[in-house]
Image (cartoon, rainbow, N blue to C red):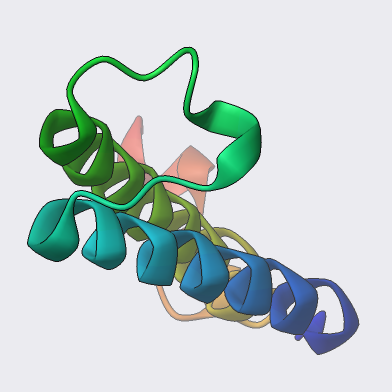
Length: 81
């Protein structure tokens, strides 16, 4: 488990999701994005999807995968023999 990498990614994704929720519910966008964003609610849904994707990659890419996972299933040579 590489939690020293996973924890900062989850924190950043949660902040990104919070900004997405604010954009969806209130139409609020951070000041550095206000000139570029034309549809705040759609932008918020996009932020929520990105935050979900980052969390999904962290959980299934960093936390669950490890050297012990390979031992549970059959070896690749056994699958093709």
